[in-house]
Amino acid sequence: MFHQPCHDKTVGPLPELVKELVKDGGEGGARYKSMGYMDFMKLFFAAKLDGRRSHMDALRN
Image: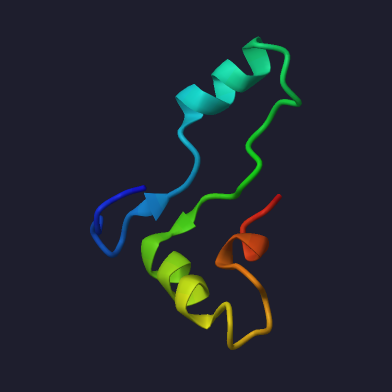
């Protein structure tokens, strides 16, 4: 994971890792979407309030 990037930065799957997954015969494509860091933090802290078991549920493609 990251250590508190700038609030206006985008966080998401590393393109290098997604490319390796496809090359090695994987399903292809990122399994999680990219988003702004502040949006990610809002999802993280609101997950239980929204009835989700994990904040990752909202990030799946």
